[in-house]
Image 1: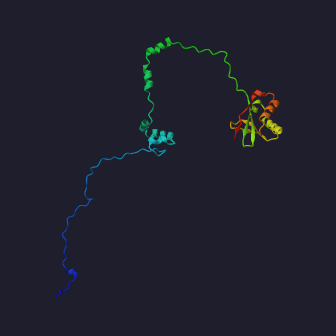
Image 2: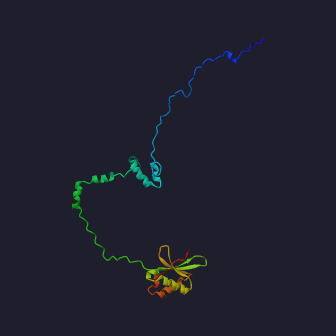
Image 3: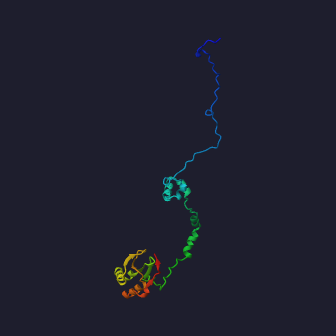
Length: 216
């Protein structure tokens, strides 16, 4: 025989017994037993953005040093100690009044040494004309004449004379030292030596030197 149908709302509801609430991990306060820590403040340079200990290795060490002296004098004295004056003070303390009084009596002022007689003034460097051959390529050489201006020779006229005499190019240029010299296209060192002696008698043969052949 079937039981009569009843709605679900009429059935008795069995409620479970209320469980005891257990505290969660967040609610349990566990005391901290680890090592104590502290927060340290670090000073950074306003110029190089580095700690002052590393400012001396940067490109603006002088500016960083001036900033540190004004902003943190204690750290400045620790990083850049001034030279000690103990040695100077010790020397001053060792001097006594007796030593100071006896010094003028015992030691007379030394007379100035007489000037040496017969000393000759340093002679000015001798004027020289230097003729050098420079090898630019295997088949091309130039002759460089330097020092003619020391004998009051007009370099432009001399350059024109060399170009006309040897049918080549010649010009006045400046060397690496900024001095004027004449560059003649071609190898004419011996011929130019004789031409200088004949054209300018004030330049004797002893005043003309040959330089070593150079490669450019």
